Image 1 (cartoon, each protein chain N blue to C red):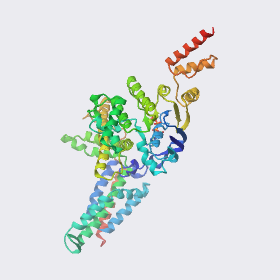
Image 2 (image 1 turned 60 degrees about the vertical axis):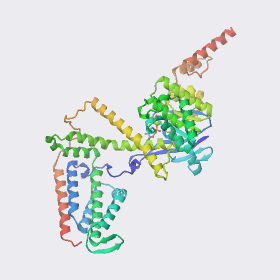
Image 3 (image 1 turned 90 degrees about the horizontal axis):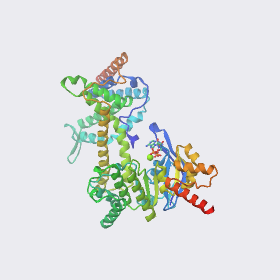
Image 4 (image 1 turned 180 degrees about the horizontal axis):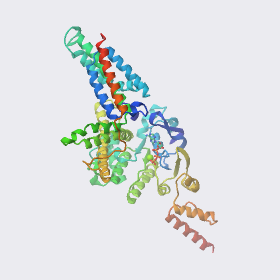
Length: 269
Length: 286
Ligand SMILES: Nc1ncnc2c1ncn2[C@@H]1O[C@H](COP(=O)(O)OP(=O)(O)OP(=O)(O)O)[C@@H](O)[C@H]1O
Ligand SMILES: [Mg+2]
């Protein structure tokens, strides 16, 4: 069960992307998401996917991982696809059944949205697979630092994010144990009726919540007893510095994004 | 009756590596036995119990319960949960209802019994385990660790299993609760002929309550024998990080020096009795 979660999982490696500054990686991913929304040519999408596939190869991450992610989100993708298809836009109607009608515009948007979602997931995967979750959290936290001037609790938020990420695998393990414990008390796991299902879920959720609160409580005490104080700036064991390599990475990324637009401008579909 | 036949178990580690937790384990437990499972930390005790309860499927080998191959016979597997009760190492993994009473009734309810029978069983379990009346309407989360453990045990006993598995049921309890809970389990074992398989780190528990000892070492079956014959091999036990009570060592040494003393002496009380009877015998002779 713990192993079935692939998004947000880190792949050990030593590629240039692994070594790059997490802040730059986040920034580039952020821009990438924006760029995706302004691209509406199939050619650009295909080119984009090609470049990302090459990057996966360089980082030695199996492309299968990306497709697995898409499988796990298939429901959302199909659902939004349907909404788009049936309610997306007016104009020339090419298919009609009862209250449902499909327009040409809707078909086109649906296809584009599908491509965008796909590229989004695959691209974001590249970020999470090559960055340790804790580094990611710290980088996100650091992004808030300028807001400190306005009394925004940037340090605390960064700590909070790192703690949450740190505890996800533990919670998964704990859930597994609780399921085992309830199973051996004869809880009906494969019960068909709604009542049985609800009962099963409650019997798992309550112990999980209780133990999470308890754990949070204990963690707070443990942190305090080791002198953690809110509002004090903490030093870090590993400090990422911006270097020439990161600049090169950033420039390359920009070139990639621009080329997506250029390809889009010179192709018909 | 429970039988393990060449059971092997692998955990799936990170990046699809495999961690061997049990290798080639074979043993048989007769109905009504009280078996203590001992072994160094990480030797595979909990894994063994989880396989027994059908939570893990053996990677190799077979598990027979009453002669039926559990993983080949669907009928046998569906009966497994009714037949075997499991008290986990950490009781807070299973308590969830809003009152202690309801929580104890959760297991029997899952068995699909009628209300009258459920009530009877819950009352029985509460009496046997010794949970005081005023706790019954409290939330299980307001209890102390020892009280939680009792509720968890009562919850499993209320299902009237034929085999009771307990993972370190008395770890971290005060001496009085320890003895109480272990006595309750022993009584349950004797009165109802329920097979008990109990993991413990305490050698005192072993000689006080068990009639068989299963020793695991690094995932392998080290020995499965009566208490006396297990404790006889002190040196071998020491080799795998286990120990026997000091008093037993004294008697073993005396025996080795040529004194005619019994060697199945595991507590000071037993030692006193043994020495008394030797002295009496001498007086009789002389
Ligand atoms: N979920 C898991 N994934 C991978 N390996 C595991 C997992 N659970 C246990 N192991 C490994 O299997 C071996 C046996 O574990 P097990 O929990 O059965 O030990 P134990 O004898 O119960 O120890 P303890 O006395 O500490 O409770 C250990 O080496 C452990 O590292
Ligand atoms: Mg254990």
